[in-house]
Length: 414
Image (cartoon, rainbow, N blue to C red; front, side, top):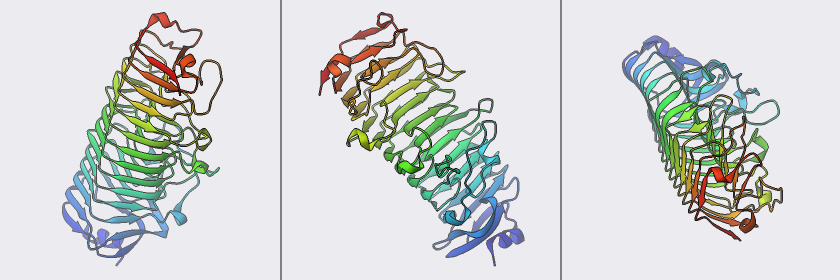
């Protein structure tokens, strides 16, 4: 008996439903009853849910208005080779849940959702997609060899776990991401949707990620900590834009990025685009190769703004940046504290572009909009690398260094 038919006959709305053992072919979306509550979908002995080449649906499992729903202990094989659709990301005013099909698990407008000990492989779109839900826990899961491409063969953001449109509180813990074309773990909302909130992304590992390992998009009060990521922005042929180890998008405040280890990042290590009133501390980013190995190589940490969000009051302390293709820290906005950072082997590209790319710390006049770096405290940083004795800290012509406190920094060639 095919699993969708079995669910149609039993219509579980509460209790525990144990999946059959072995491999089960799935031909259509399994929709749990709207409003299902106190329900556990539990794997049997070596349960593998395999999407048929004729599969049709938004996801293998979907649920709307669920409460206290748990998925535990099974594998989903999404049959990506058969089901991948070459498409771009959705327009900016459309939720991912309304756009991408062929996901593994889709939950919307729910409260109390747990994903535990799940394995995902060959997923065409997202392994886990959660929209506008509360009290979401993802722990001890893994996803590999997943995500689709656009018509040009570049990634279209898919492959990992995404929480969107006002989801929170949430936690993504101790999960593993390998060979993902798009982003690993992230939050997403378009400009006028609800922000995600009160989250934790911690203790996860990422290996071979085509876009961002972690992205915090339109969120407040999110802690990103103790994650380990390597080979971000690889393979190069699927990269659609500058990859980032830990990325930020939209209005993001009161967040902490700390104790993360990022290795071999072909892009920025940490991008703070729209990040304000937050903390970035004790993170390590190391690139060991030559500059040519990182075609999308960039600064280690970059502050940025958006048309509607300014960069302000960010604490960047105690970070270690090594082997950046260009500079260490790119700064816009006001009220930042940049102290105690160790930046070594900077400008491995040996750039001689006056000002920006040759600088260890660069104070810019703006990014997406004008917002000169000012009212800063920059102290006790080690800045070393190619010609860093001369180009340690430079500023755009519209920026006055005298508007900030700059002291006790060590600048040296290496």
